[in-house]
Length: 197
Length: 296
Image (cartoon, rainbow over all chains, first blue to last red; front, top):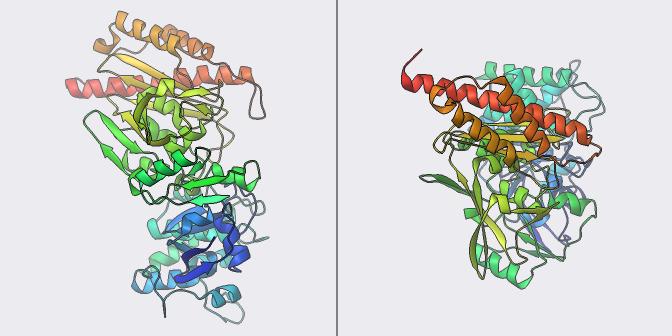
């Protein structure tokens, strides 16, 4: 079957989709966006978290056919998404042109953080920069899901308590960090967000 | 596999009548796991996401009509006052990502004894509205669960909504698991005080082949509260009464040993949760009583 939906602000079309296929599979294998990670395939780990019509969901548990006509934001589009949100309160759904991230750009997306030595690169969402600065990334497999979930929480709740952060990230497993640096990163992003306003 | 995408409820009923083996999918948090792991390969998937009315709820005089696909996150946000037990239960479901997709209709459709909503529905009192092209029927929640992962639905029926009694008194929900998130209940317990009818209702999860009420325990407690005039005098429930109630709740279990816990642990834990939820709800009933009567 064919599925038409919006990914990172741009309309996309996936062909030859098997009816039992997940949104995660379509993103990774058909659209070439491997940022959302495939780990547990049962909604336990949160590493495949994307936003579906703005709401964080496990993309492994959304049937591909269910996203027809809907709006998906993946970690590859997070930097642009955050930028647009900061500039004019978000991108209108399905808009073409200047808004959103093209599939080409999303496929080539690479973290270009503000290097502490060279000061190069600024193409990260604030939450991504905070994860780097706080040392919240070790093996990095859980990071995309955590970024999407944490970014959505900060959008909803700009001044979260530690309990709020733990609750918002309770569906994302990390086996490396012990979560402390991840907590630091989210606190850092929240503090920077507050300063910026 | 065929993916059926009805645009309306009527179309969904027609599709289910034509293909009774079609598996309905809404949040997908149960169905997709089975497909991902190749445990299930249905001939037809029947997507219910396009049917807006399934994600709506309506607060009536005595009941809340909760659409089958209303996600748990919405129940937590919007129905805490009307359905406190179910809102608490919803908060224990998995993670935010899952609560954003899953809803009570799926819990009922899967009918797992470990489904988090069941004890709250049993304690509050509810009817499941199911429909087919043949017509609509309301199934009392007590008659809905018919076996392990079996329910009273006919092959051509779909769950449309649940009519849940609005709380007329305090409700509580308790669940045992290894952490606060992403936990399938080792066992769970829901309790609702119904001061209007002077009754107490319970629901037990994950401690019998189906979700069950502890009816003997309810009858004992109803009689003890009546006899002691507790509803009127608002006294603390006698420890011996609470203890007896807890034991009877344990006795209502028919659990198994499995990876999550042993049968004897489940029986014990249900007793502990029964006593605690009774204490918590009774304390808030007494608190509310003191406020309405203006005595300090």
